[in-house]
Image (cartoon, rainbow, N blue to C red; front, side):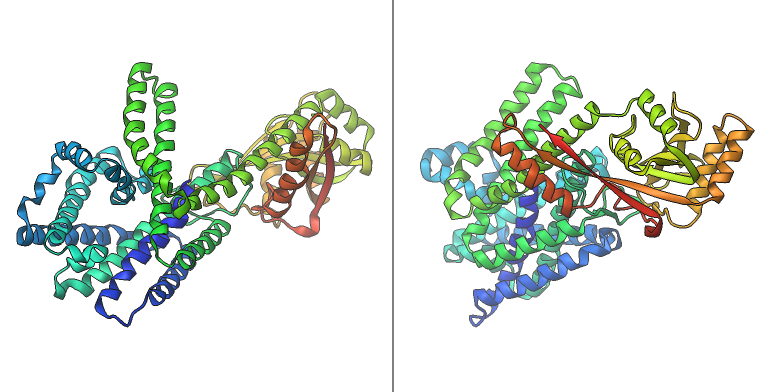
Length: 533
């Protein structure tokens, strides 16, 4: 749902800001607004590769100017048109509103939700600010500014009800139109940036949890780990944004779709927050249940109103959600079956000792890359059976990216000898920070690993063997597994997921070592087929 929000927010935000130029000339048609919106969206998404850190210093001033501007204009309209409009802040008018309007008032909640959209964008950036700064910003800047802005527009509409469709720009005093047009467009871009960054962040977290195929993730800031850029996600969102903008032509459907996405993000967040309260914070069940019931009651009323708009654009976020769910569930199921197969066919210490004893040992070093932190994957058995030999120094390497900017050279490699196996077989965990270059080319990586191995060598003879192997050259072996589902136990649907969906994702997304810079002339890829029954 957040991905759907990430596609809809830029479209509706920029479109709403640009539509203001129509009030300046009758010659400007909706198609011109749509074309200008598409151009701005293209520039916005193409700019993402530079990273938000280069322009984030301008975000706060833009938003402060935006909130100050709408607050002052709102206050001006309140004083000029209808000062008593501020009575609407009192909650008891909610009761009178529904008592007077009944079903019509409930249906209008779908439009009212658009007044609070944007709050969900905060979820992505909570880790960048402390609790106090968020409380102060919302209490002293955001909330008062929005109350004044919406009250000012209501006061204006009381005297000018015919300007309902252009309330925001029509209520702006004439001399301030163009400055506010510029500020509105910039604020829309900043709001769009928040959801685009949130989309990158949630994909990155899903990849780290093994719930999404490995897309390209580039860190754009050496200060904030959460500032990342995913090219594949960026261009997918760009296409979705443009299709939504051109398809709906700025009609009310885009607002319905946006409202549905936002309210479902809020509902899901409430549910997950309740889980955190019970499992992590160990809050008593009655308090957690009270929290859940209160917020679901509020959000559920809005959701029930918006679900009436399914045919008028509300289906869009569900379509986007279904697209990403198919990818996520197919990948997760395939990964689960792969892990179960490897756990059941993992090479034991005794079997590995037998493989090493039966294989001819040739001079040199072999780095065998694997995702397993413990144990030896069955693909090693496949490799040894078909080559009949192993390098004199065999190292199983697992690469980990830590949530730190950089890892010190002396902490880069964690090495140990493999138990119950003759000398010459070791395990190595290579640790990198998110800004470190994972470069395996040249001799630096080889020299560093051998130096770390010599620190755990059993004696001078073992250290001499390591030096001899290092001088004899190095080869890199990467395993590539193909899952094949067969048998009636799995059923046709699960066979379809593994044989087609998961295999397609595995083939077209990055592998586990795709981010490593290797010398391809020294790299050998070994394929193996896992038969899932």
